[in-house]
Image (cartoon, rainbow, N blue to C red; front, top):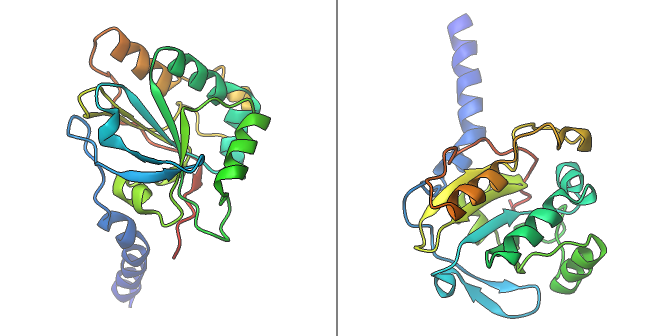
Length: 205
């Protein structure tokens, strides 16, 4: 009886994890998956056109407490300003499906960024979740860094303390800031894969 109950538990666990595991996640030190998407300002952007530049992809959901922590404190907006001042392309990606938490249209995304003093290069709208699934984006925030050669050099969390408390930001190791500094110095990213934390990405079911 005990073995049967354990088998049922394992089956249920696998049933809930299988869809995520089926997504092909990008691999660090391998070419980043190519994508094209509609931006908040109504244009079309494809990753290939950005070859020669460092690109940061940031999955976001403005209603998520973990995202609010990093925006309302000014942490992510400052990272965006520091990065874009160096010529780095910083793209927010919104994979929330219509009627799901965090879904916005382009005009609302732009308005939100102005209100939060955010400064990404642009915002890519991904309501179908195509880009999110291509990258295996699990949480908001979840960050990826692509070097000028189009190779993925970082994927993971924004920092080392998985909490929604703004008071933890100063105590945490900012993985994204460290990775960009190492890239600028011509070094290999020392912590190239970390555990993301935040709200689950609200894909369409």
